[in-house]
Image 1 (cartoon, rainbow, N blue to C red):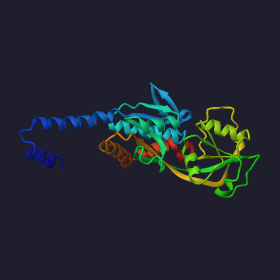
Image 2: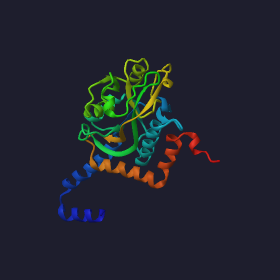
Image 3: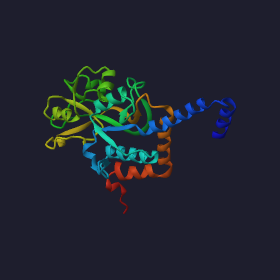
Image 4: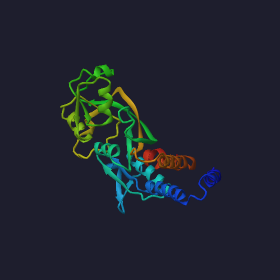
Length: 270
């Protein structure tokens, strides 16, 4: 393929050094652009730690740790600095939608967000259910039942808010953080919240998470994505997709899954 392209250029642009220089400059710009991506994630505080100034996932801590280590391995393949910054979810979404050269993970793909970013790879599929207080069960059996409760806590700008709104829910109570959402539920100020069951992002240690329980009502399934700002070239997107495919073929993806997503007990042999 490369020989054919070079041969074609030779025939087309012979004795046109300025044109050739322009093409080479563009190619070099793509390479620099790939290295200039600023990687950000969200809600990973309790599953990650900082080592020598770099964000790392804690062993067997869960999906947030898994996401960070997966992206780090892709960065190694791409030979770019392994720098990842942790931001609140709403800010991360705003940055990747409005600023150049941003790489953000994980974010759920929705119709509203579809054209606002470039979707690079699928990271992990999760299922969300409604959660309630053990001492104040709602008795809901369906999504329609959930529409009749007084208030459902959601994170402002999050996928649960957008998806439930699209399904006709008008009893949503939006808050800034997931910690606030669960605090309101535990205090009895809301009746339900939607969650994938990962409470590791909760920052308030005194929050009594043992007082809540999952219902049998599934809200939806969602897939977390790595996405880029729209100004990122398709060629750069393709390079990162190939890096992910390389991880999968080599068996490294499975190793990361075992080490960070699965609990330690899952890796024991008897």
